[in-house]
Image 1: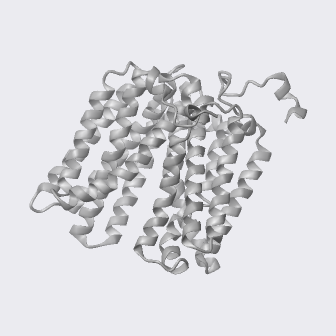
Image 2 (image 1 turned 30 degrees about the vertical axis):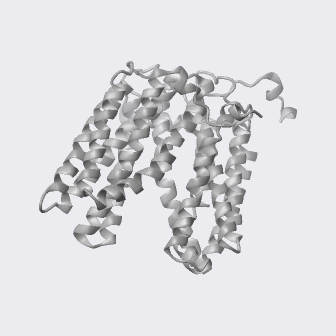
Length: 431
């Protein structure tokens, strides 16, 4: 395999000016989001001296984000997606600017930070599905995996650069500057997105009652084995095998280290994820996309299991990096298949469910890991159990959902998002 077929595929950036605008907006937004997240946490802790208050702020932000995502999914399937992105980003910029003004006051108000967290979470969630649903309209079907890999790469870069930059700025000019820079980033994003064409969803009918519209999206999930399988297979990974909440205990008790050891545990998956995104060029060329996805989630499960069994730190870090690689490949393929098999009229609603799961799933998984560790009396044992359960779930889904195994990006689905099987593939003997 040639090097050009392994490294991240930049074809969507070369061929689509509009996708370049989306990509640039996402790249700078990822950094800005981390600036605000870290700055808000630092400010709340400085004003209250309470980690509980910091946790409460994260909770209200997460809940408002989920509400915004569900609402935004409905909106993205009924309105011009370009307009939704512009309006929600403008609203978020105003909220973040308010945080900057509050932080610059001689006596910043804690209540305002909480209110702003609710508003920022809701508006960001409201625009998220429209941004995700825009991609299939801006690139060719064969470029969906590459576009997903580039999006994932921006998230990984933002995750590595943003928090460190926020710490430097907060320690220097102050947290108000973190908020101000993020507000400016949103304004730049508005300028980048403004030249996009109108992105009205295809097949839009008369407006439906919100509950009826969401019911249509849920019925599609129930009837489409590929898309339902994409959501379920992610549950196997993030709910049953999410070990991050156990890292502090594992770093100090199991590996006998201190804060630096715990930091290495959190860093290792990010390193693997970044490498996975950089070497994702093959994801858009593989024919058996569904099988590659199943294999990637299985890599996560095996790596997490081996991490739990690792007798020393460095071996554990290797397996965590491998887990991060598998997770990134899985995310790229899941995003591409989701957009490929979802009709345009449902992209917003289905995308909002995917984003909501991605937001809430890891939190549920971390709570589950903590409960299992308490029940077993062993954090490493809980990690092993989670990895094994993940692998069992992946195997069960692979057997129960043949459409997921056969899913591919190499041919278009029909108008209802169902796979078009060739006669050979439709034969039971072929599988």
